Length: 364
Ligand code: ATP
Image 1 (tube, rainbow, N blue to C red):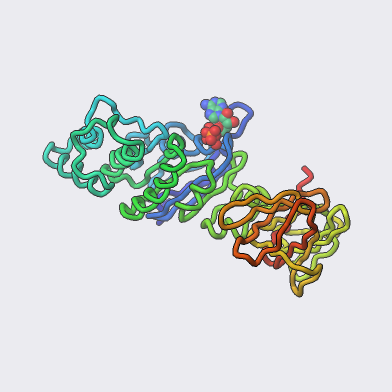
Image 2: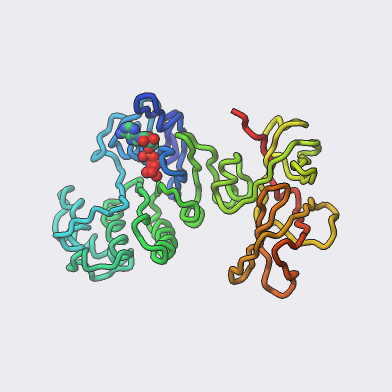
């Protein structure tokens, strides 16, 4: 089956005994996309990546790269390279030999190899480092050598297995931006797996959120954040408040929910078939909450809450409060406009119901 995508998978399944690690995954990755697979430990990310690389075979389903079926193609014959967390650079070889290794195996003549190596080193911001030993380089530089070693082979797909996991926080922040720039510069399709939602959000064009071997949602980062399709995505991507109660009414795609102490809150319906009387969960982002003086504001949902603590956080204070025995936190701007709050202050928190998402609580 031909397809325009660089990568296309249909109904992939991989079982280990009774456990289904990859459970009916389909995906389409257009050329030049930074595609991330985001999910908690054990959800099946590495298993999926190994299927794409050819290190493992699916029990069901098909993998196509640029329209060519890959199921029976061995790893070294796939137009795919992989960057691992521990980079796997050869410590006894120079940077240049590390980068030229794959070219040499492809029998590219020495002069051409040197030229390509110099050029790719320049592109990753390490010009002239051919003769250095990789162990003499900083963590970030080693990372770029590992990328250069793959990119010089011009793969259709570059698979990256948590490559920033071993770096310290500051370097990780820096490399996120660099990786994104390098991906755009080379135009190679990246499939990147991570359990770190901020990595996926900063770098990706598309993110697949994975849970228990399945994709809950595949969307650009902004859409995942603003329109999470499932409670799991709402809770996993970015900070969110979750309030649980019973549906009082559903009208015009807005649901009203009664929390256990009688407080009523409103939000946009996000799951089909939400009915009066059902248990429901409402998600509202901290930055969507505003402090109001009255218990009513036109068009807003307003909720009373008791302050538990405020934590200074630079530009904002983090206000941790409680309503109906449920925690809720907001960000209070430090621009002089905010009230002074102490523990046990009673506040009114308001939000535009269009920014809140309401899902039925799954009782299964
Ligand atoms: P992490 O982020 O911790 O690496 P992951 O999302 O990459 O997790 P996988 O390594 O793909 O998860 O594992 C998914 C599930 O499949 C886990 O329950 C794991 O124990 C199981 N699994 C993976 N490989 C095998 C194997 N070779 N044999 C048996 N079970 C396996």
